[in-house]
Amino acid sequence: MDLHKTFVAVQDASRKLLMLSDNEINQVLLAVADAAIEKTAVILSENQRDLNRMDPSDPKYDRLKLTEARLQDIAADIRKVATLPSPLGRILKENILPNGLKIKRVSVPFGVIGIIYEARPNVSFDVFSLCFKSGNACILKGGSDADYSNRAIIRIIHEVLQRFGVDPHVVELLPADREATTELLHANGYVDLIIPRGSSSLINFVRQNATIPVIETGAGVCHAYFDRYGDVNIGASIINNAKTRRVSVCNALDCLIIDMDCLADLPDLCLPLHLSNVVIYADQPAYNALQGKYPTELLHLATEDSYGKEFLDYKMSIKTVMSMQEAMGHIRQYSSKHSECIITEDKERAEWFCREVDAACVYVNAPTSFTDGAQFGLGAEIGISTQKLHARGPMALEEITTYKWIVEGTGQTRK
Image (cartoon, rainbow, N blue to C red; front, side, top):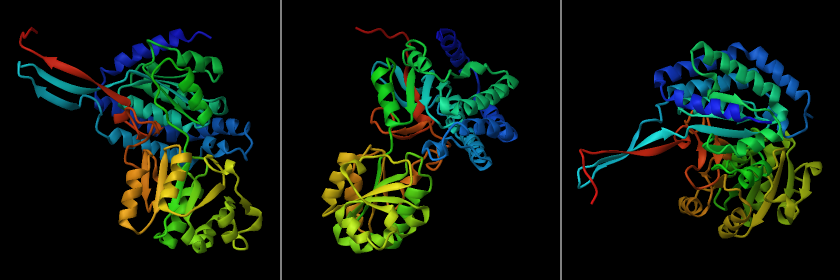
């Protein structure tokens, strides 16, 4: 498959985007939000076609599913993006050199951003809104699981763009096949940045095969450490919310780490979990503490494979440690550097944890479920970056801009 014409058209559209005012951009975004609600029936009908092809027990099923409430939330996020200040044209640094040259660093779009993602049709709306607001054209490569949903969403966006006289090539959806992925990863000269969203296997494939710069949005292997100075009531609430709010998302809790001195509190910490039928894989000390106090059919002994695993399901592991150093060592060994949490009433230990734990987001007495662009006040997100170059954590408007230097002189020449 030759997608060269598509890449050329998107690149050309990206240049036209630079001519739009922020007000014009915002008007389009508000219209897209309205259209998402007005076309709810169409979107849900196409989404059902995708759902019919997937086993409801598949962890990706919840990610794939759209509902009226979720579309309302998506529209609200788009409207939020429209209210945010433009990330473009900001003077990041300026100075007058001794020779009189005026030099400043100004924020600009990347140009064309390619997004590769799996069974998450909400990403189509999120990516478009953030890229459009930041002056970037985008090329979307969704998974086959969500193809009906994605195509319905892009058709609706294209209708709005055409109504406003905006080149619809500012957002394009590629075919849902592997050949399109390969071509996108090698679209040098047309695509400026690739961002993968999905499983660790997808991210690894993109990183290993792309010839274009990549920002990784890594899988979320998230831990909560219940410190010896933790509050049991707060801990039970945090653990339950982090695990059961939405098990299919990357900020869901995968492993509870507990201080040996707190094992007597473990049944209370896990009490709310059985209401959601959470399967627990506990090491021997934790297993002993829970035996007879947690449903037998939901309690299993952990193996080495129980750790460092993103479950994306109603499943969780428990690790018992003798010290905070051991807890942080376990996180260091198994973390994906996404989101980590400590539950403690000791301020110094909380500060120590925040200083030592290497992750994009570190929480004190709050669940990892808050790792989200909208929750951080960013409107929406492209993804959660787990790398350290350019962007880290929820990626929104600022993270999908770069900068250029503008130098003004009065005829100076260099010796």
